[in-house]
Length: 80
Image (cartoon, rainbow, N blue to C red; front, side):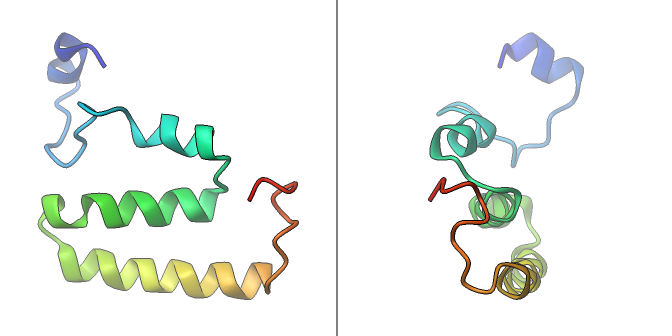
């Protein structure tokens, strides 16, 4: 992302896209919304300064993901 644009929108430090955005990575990997959310939380939790809080949220998202998908890996149109 253009540095000027990042400065204008006051991007938090834990949104480090110098090696490519997580959004692009998620799209390239065919991740669903649960998988993207989990990866985003794990990648940013140490930088954000709310490590334990983000880990607890990740565990909650994993539980919801498990309950809703129930082992059905085909729910994401086979993008696994």
